[in-house]
Length: 175
Image (cartoon, rainbow, N blue to C red; front, side, top):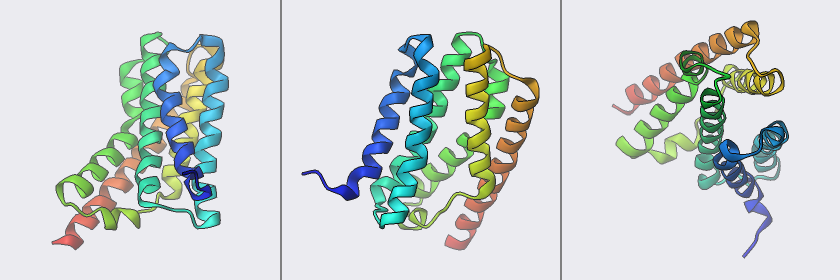
């Protein structure tokens, strides 16, 4: 049965579906679809917090949707020769840090409850913004602006460092 409180989770699932379809989309649809994904990224969390609809499923789905989207868009750009593997690796480094940390906390330490209280920080949000900016830049121009890419990669590395430190702190606190 449909409940309003499921809207944020539906938006996250929508973003995962968009992400999985991204590589096979016609090239002229990609900017529009990425824009829809970005809007859903903003709305799912905003709606969940504003109306008190935060759920354990949503806490898990939202970052998964973010990682899947970034991965699929990045791989699409790599295979279309618009982005190199090394550039993508640096751009995606924060996503790897978050994924490894979440995997460790949930599946190795079995501490899902502690993860529910884990909030992204400003630098992580900034990294997401610049990641999208790089993707839009490449989709629009066909190649990355070197300064936007460099700044996005730098923010990604700073955010990854923060997340690694936070996960280490969670691990140390658990022992």
